Image (cartoon, rainbow over all chains, first blue to last red; front, side, top):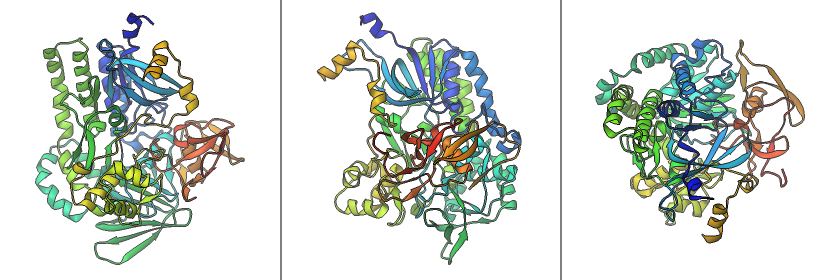
Length: 484
Length: 98
């Protein structure tokens, strides 16, 4: 292969994830002349917040509400921008430029599409990997019939499915109330909402209320909350929770404060404790990350333009810290402007000028976020649960086993892997990472920042050997394997 | 259990669950189609044999693993149901050769 061909990338920019941040970033970058590809695992654009925005079967627009339908406004600009859109593409690795080839600054993306693996070379990667639900480990959360509230919302958006039979929602956070409101609009009945918001959170959140009073979410949120509380039985101050059943959910057991245990028969339990950044890809790419004490989660470290510690890799949206859909959209545009600057399309002054309206909109969208983060922070007992609770669903490791490993000298999540195999199943720590960090930190009496997080490695999604073996090989590839 | 809202768009799709005929809508993922057909548990874990079903619906938890058209360990929430598709619940690990 000639040197010239070696340095020609397939695209200037790959945007990974087609939620609000990815849609807005790809449209802006391609619209200003960068050859751009938008990659996403799902069959359609939208991410999770605007999931099925192009083809939801829910015809009545009042069910999903205006905030959902705002997502449709991001599709036109993407289409008009000329960006290549590759849905159904699972990215399993992003490799940094090779140190032994200083003249070649391309990043290599490994992805699978239609069952075949391939590599893409690009000059810049913008990760817009969004959020996933914070693990909510309670005894029995692995029983069939127990799902995430976010999962249930995806079922509504993609398939027009609502829970039937006896339905209980439990947890805290805006999505829990939004889902309840959408169910009411859809005519689905709810038996109870078990609110786990710790009473003490109100005291901590109150000083932050003034900023929230100027939040665009305030009016809508308050109306929605009141409507749900009027129509559904809401149990406040829930301090203990477990799911019971043989082979499937049969009952939800809870306690309020120091009160007696209560039991409700249930067919479906939907759990929610907020969302955390989906950082697996950034972590496996080597991006530095930090513990966010307010949001109680790890997030990749970024500057005000979304640039990470790895050259050529930026991050925008909830994957860089939870800010919500409207903030993600603006962060995507701001990061895309910085990519234009880095790739020599605009100078620094033009970048800064163009970013002004997006920064203003971002600031508006983030108003009051700290109030929400503080009010809806899950209680300690749900972040570091009792000994008998499974924390690693894949390997079926309990919180008690993690604590026992700490007593034997295990100092952090990476050591816990070799002690217990926790975090080594197919989910690659997505469902246990935050909990394992919190359990170890609490047991050791140190900050989660000190115990760290799993060190992840590509492939970040399982890929079959057959897919890998089918990769087209160049002389350079064979060379790389033989010499390294 | 889950039920379909009235006034829902989409064509009916016939497929099978462990050989039994079942019906879904075009656009359903396999995991959604299972839940719509009253199948909450789609596999037993290789570790303890405990029953599991779809949990996250967005491809991160790997609890909805099923065998689809003879290939094991497919993520049910990431595959769209297709006419004539054969979906099988999975007992423990993916079987060798599937």
